[in-house]
Image (tube, rainbow over all chains, first blue to last red; front, side, top):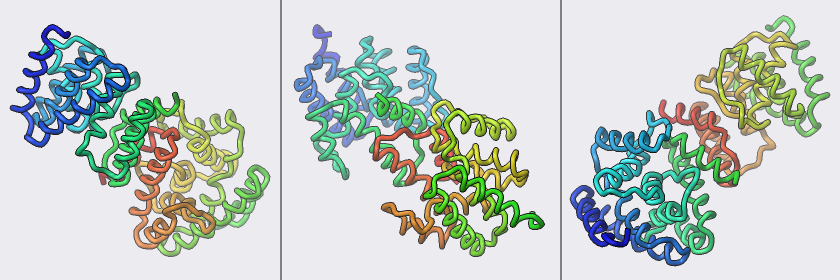
Length: 195
Length: 195
């Protein structure tokens, strides 16, 4: 990976800049920064983490049909069967970006691809890279929600606890606002709290 | 129903007294009281509501195997397919009590049986009686949780909104405490918030 890491990162960032709104592009850079910090702290491969970070929201502004098509590519390739019938863009854009990374940028590293694919919902089995992206996206410096201080504190102490914290609070937040709760994310939460 | 209502109610209450702990027996009487008040307010059949109320927790102290057996009887008879593999007693005891009501007490009224069966999770389609039992169980006078005042206020104004309120707060509460969230109850919540 290290041979062409800089080029690959630049190419992906160029793509992101062209395909998402400026605010989201800046968010991407902040997630990368935060992810680097966590990677150093927890001993993860920094280049892998950076690639996952720059890629994670690359498809967020896709129109729905394209996003779904990319997402399905990823799931089919990985042999993952989850119900997408009620999955909104919040769920689909990560899966789509993993497909983009694989097909367009030749990223074959499963830890990177899964980190990107499941950065919103988390997943049953999460690598260190997966947890770092999941958390970095949640606590990057401009995030400003009720419990973000607690999330940042947990992220510095215990990545697994921070992971469960994001999962449970995402569900609580959706329920509070009477928004649709994606069923798979509750199954993933149930898996994590029973560990 | 009215012909032998008093006898039927007495017989069920006798069973409840013999099969649940004294605290739960008193809770049952308070749910009945609250349910009567709501039935009068919203124009539901008071005798049906009272039968559902006295029956609703009749199986709560069953041992797990018996509870599961009764619960499965009810689901099979109604042709309902839901996954019970991770359903705890919180979910099962209502289904079991509906079976008890049908088999032992000859209650055939679906509104009563479904009100009993789904008094914890709610259900996709809920009758007026179903909503009343669902809410009465939540707001009876001795209930004392964070948002019970809000729940009581809503119950007096709008039974549907109170129903969604219980559904969403049950999910929030489980997530807050990192407890298992029964998947079917999230599906039911998703159904209700999309109405």
